[in-house]
Image 1: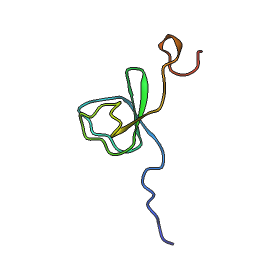
Image 2 (image 1 turned 180 degrees about the vertical axis):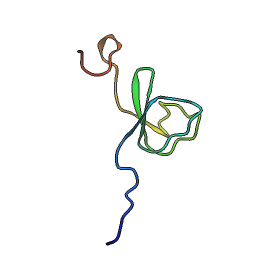
Image 3 (image 1 turned 90 degrees about the vertical axis):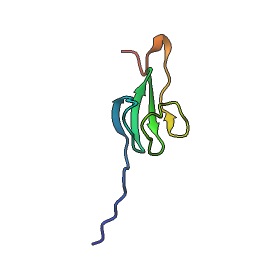
Image 4 (image 1 turned 60 degrees about the vertical axis):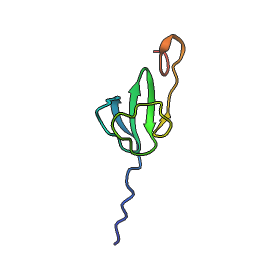
Length: 70
């Protein structure tokens, strides 16, 4: 049976953005309270919210919180 390489098919959580690190499409980083997903491979030193490489995934709610209160 033939095997198909689908590449990345899911987000990969990377934690806080690191300017010294390169990121791969579908990596997700946090920066200043927001989550961003890489829409293409990102060379080191290209931080969010540069829309060439990143798509914002979250917004800050009241009191600077991200997500539901709890």
